[in-house]
Length: 349
Image (cartoon, rainbow, N blue to C red; front, side, top):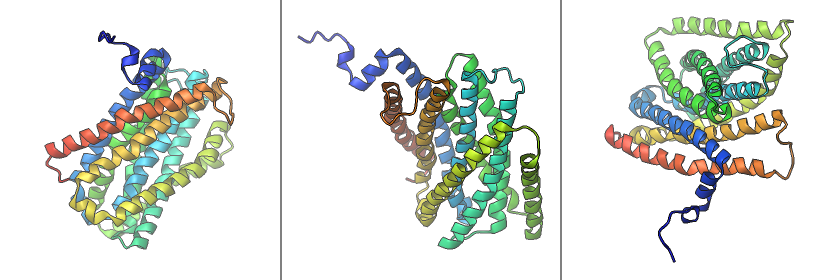
């Protein structure tokens, strides 16, 4: 007879498992909190896109750059945060902000990757815009990509270090925090900085823009080349650059392809700006959840807690289950929040 007593059997099995298994519940709680904050930040970015539709109308090709730029910040600096988590777990660095070879070279490599990718994304966006017939300017697109990228890199590095170190000090697993929270910071910074960069250069004469572009390329790329060719011991730097450049290039191309699809629908997006609110959270929340999974797998491999095997052990299935469970409340919140924000701000949907 049903006495009405609450037991684990009265709620869905996956949720019951999450509550019953304490380590699983801890990971779920930490990840959900960071993903919740990430979702809020993504929606703020979406609102920025919805509000600045007039700017997209003046330079439609910018829509091609937006998904790639947002994704690239997350790819570079979430990876940086993941490395910090692994270094902390393995005792290679301490959460004391004391300079060390792994930390210094990881910072240098992440900065170098950001500078290189800013230029690459600008070039790809211009090429695609010209191919599909969107209004664009080579100088403007390159300046926007580089200026926004350089400004965001400074803040992203700082926040990534703070998130990893302070989280670790307070007993939280950095692997559950870095990807979503760095994605949050990246989303909240990247879009406003892209539109800010557009506004900064809009009143500058063409020949002066060209001079500024040349100066920016020289001042960002020459230090990277100089350090890369130097004979200083830089094992961490070399390994990170060698492994990251091909992957980030592929990610950049995929991001530009996403932007290309949006570019072909630019007229519809401008007339229904409410749809723009959904773009950042749908792009980034899935990536953040994948980042959590990748960071945890990386740390487990480095710590020797698991080995590569075609048949994954239960602890790996456990982590996949965690990520899939997180997707249910996270994407539900995305839809609900986007609808509420659109109505409150009177953005057409």
